[in-house]
Image (tube, rainbow, N blue to C red; front, side, top):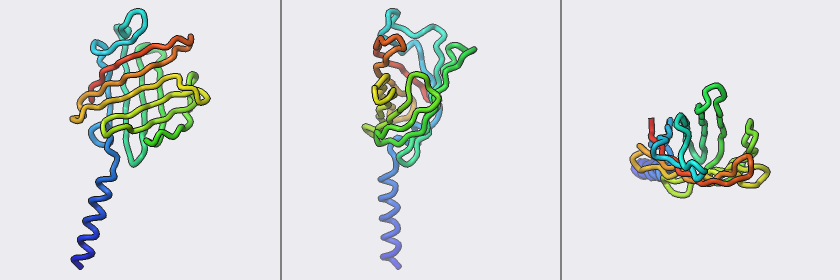
Length: 159
């Protein structure tokens, strides 16, 4: 009986060690702080009324992503995808500029998201979450619909 109990405890310890590192503290809504964010466009800053909330739900090798940009309240920009965390591309539905997305966990508090059109990376973003789960920084480069590339760094707080 003791052997069975020790085996069960060892198995549960291994299961916990294999759990996705990005889970618990990073789940939920993340709101951008425009005053701490910048783009490399001519102005260098986001529009004064810029509003973006990103929601993450992490699971076992899975990310459910939902974002809503309401900078233009009459025409909100919504982005949804469900992917694995191993970098495998998947369909990115309901988007004009992208048709594939890839998410790769690169460290316990970091991940890379590539948004692609037919395999061509249009936007590459790199998320770094604070270990306490309170803040995150998203850095990346994206190509505008006009074909111009711009870098950005955006600061988020966990709601």
